Image 1 (cartoon, protein in one colour):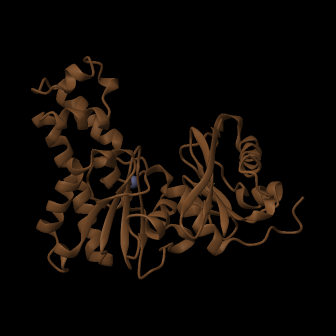
Image 2 (cartoon, protein in one colour):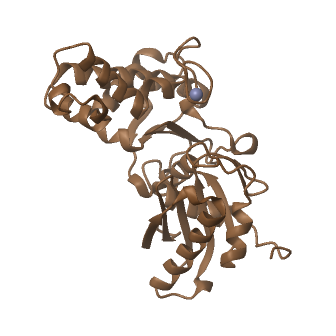
Length: 329
Ligand SMILES: [Zn+2]
């Protein structure tokens, strides 16, 4: 059995699991708070300790683990194994040698990958993209991440920067995006953008049960609450998901014309709205793609849920990790 560790470096929690690479099955998992405010040195120490505890609690020798893969929420230098910019972590981690540090602390070779590219690899190897030559993944949560598999290869692009589907533009003169550009998909259809549509509807006094459901505290409006309202038949809530799905559909239409995917997979917390979001995406694709056989493109939900990234990066690491450098302390 080939085993490796997959880890999700999240803003709140460090989650790690031992993954059987033949089946994609998780043998055991553990999670500790990231405590990112303590700084990257402390987070890396806690991460290495988590991996060693995980191996111990699984009752296996360290030698049984082939590699460690870490899914990282941000921009990386894949060649050097460094983090360049992690927008959601304090300090943003410029030029932190995460790969070599973890390899030195654990004695196990290590590789890094962007978190949504990790999800993409997981879904492609073991989930909703299994057996597909070409897929696109939209991960809709606090932001919108993306990933592509093209002709049976996880697409990385220059330095691993390819696949940022959330920052493809819906309208070149649209609202400001967190990345500094205007009119990106993320500014229209991320979790906060969907919540903002709900807040606006209540603030404008439209006839919707969203107001009562949040007890008129606008800060309590979430995509999940709006989805719940939509499922009870609330027209305004349904319309919000129609709009969000339309925007994702427009971005997905551009992806269809670019890479001709067989499947488009929706992941992330907001995807839990299911058909509320899938339906307008499918409709928009059928209406707005003319130059490829769009009726053969399937739009589906992720199958591995919040384990996709951990499984995907464990599998990625096995394919790419280098042996730890001898000159490291
Ligand atoms: Zn953007």
